Length: 106
Length: 172
Ligand SMILES: [Fe+2]
Ligand SMILES: [Fe+2]
Image (cartoon, rainbow over all chains, first blue to last red; front, side):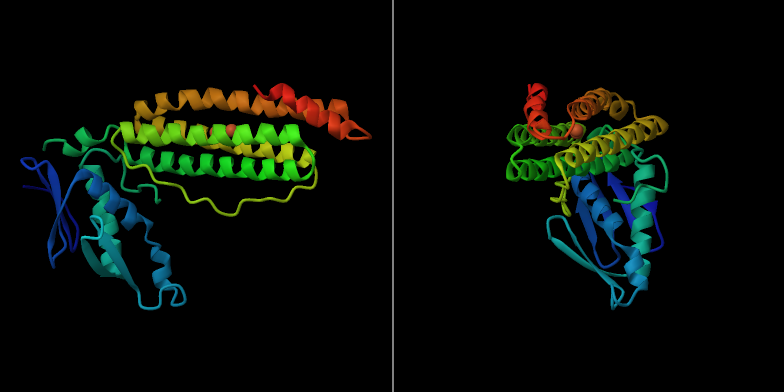
């Protein structure tokens, strides 16, 4: 298994043998197909981080993240969300299918 | 490192994001034309209603074309959320003027994606959009022709009914 990218809290791995990816979320490591990785990217980049700085829109500054067809559930704070966004952006650049770090936010 | 991601998907993720945005725009156009068809039906412009029913279907086809492309390249197409569809128009002329504005906005959006895909070196996406670039020329031209016909016919007297009849020439 090879490290694709490591952010402050998380690490994205690629397994050539299994033709899949792993993300180490500290509490647990999640195995993901490419499609699931794309789904994760969409979910993470869609999180409206600016709501974390407005107590009306996000009272507690936490985000619920469900992965792999609701198999996994994570609760992330603001810094973890930001870190995961950077893992996703940089990870896809390293994987060779994203051109720059400032991916379009969807 | 073996390119497992590249083997799974043959376009750039940025292109995929833009194409998902375009899927939304085509879905929005389809819903807008359906609202226009409804307006035309309710206001006695039955031929124009037919025209917009057909336009609405075409826009859905455009959407599905992009949707299926994203599947073909191994991407992840997203089913679009469509909200805030306007149902209020002041006249049949207003309806067609809005249609032209809408088509121009779609053209601009497609051009932007082409330019960005070119910047990304994503030839696959750029080539895929060739069809859309040319399709937009036709779509804009159709609506421009209808607006020309409207200004020649005039809206006085039986003008409005003549306009509706003439719209039949653009239903093929
Ligand atoms: Fe279209
Ligand atoms: Fe159109």
